[in-house]
Amino acid sequence: MQEKNASFTMKLEPGLRNQFMKAAAASHRPASQLVRDFMRNYIEHHKKRDFVVAARKQSQSIAKRAARSGTDEYAMMREMENLLDEEDGDE
Image (cartoon, rainbow, N blue to C red; front, side, top):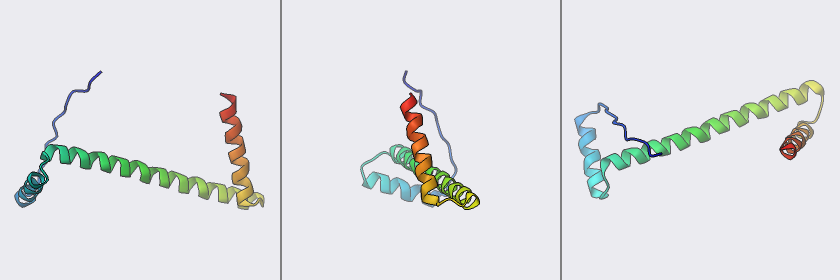
């Protein structure tokens, strides 16, 4: 099923708009395509940033659990990886 196009209206300074339109024309690409590309790139960047933040929180959680239990952090991470591998094998 094909998605319908949606309009996006934004306010910006006339000088910025003019410079952007000139740059778009110089690159022989429609301004709307460039904006869509910028949006897609921003979304991908945001997803990667969210992944890094989540991974960092997970790593901190592992380190805290290892410190509380007196276990080597790397040993605990290996144990968690083994549990995840076992989970994947159950499917």
